[in-house]
Length: 278
Image 1 (tube, one colour):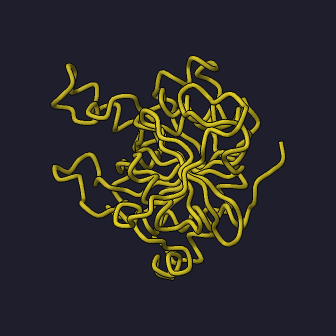
Image 2: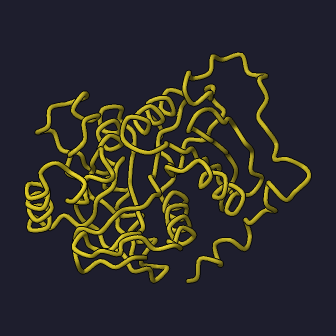
């Protein structure tokens, strides 16, 4: 199934080209808004996609949601709500890295959301992965600082099993190239380049150790999201598109990751699974 099949019934005019701006949720609700994301209880549906890039949140809403509504835009957090396959769904950007992602998730839980899928990008660690492949993380190595502020390092960061299954089934139905496995979450994007760190040999050894342990890809948000999801009793999953080849290779970045396919898979999974009452 082609990603365009997912777009057909839900694509809307570009918010930027349409002279009528998308409906904006007004400040009519009496509830106090969350400090960072500026969302009040009841303004977002239970199921929410979590891209990192604010512009990607807007694009997801305008391309995939029926009746898209801008909820709030403050700092790195841009949020929208709408419908997909007749069910309410939301999207909220998290910014880059675990600290800002943790804030987004904590505050979204506080306003009533309970089912989340990170939709983002990752760099390959497993050399068999190619740019454009999709990865669905069953858990991640906690090489970040944020999750350590919540629980000891021995505590595992794992995805919700139901979301892992739903994402895998959705990817399979669409014929996507995807892998499930353990990911890696880091704090410093450029630390994966040995030439940019103080001890390149130690860094190379670190990446080789992760590869020998069959870690498939590296990114910057899932550890905090998984840990907070476990602590707050909400569902969290993560699916990423590989935008960089294996760390051995000089040329890493591709220009056109398959974000449409990634988004369709995540939305289909949420639609199939449904949100869980908490």
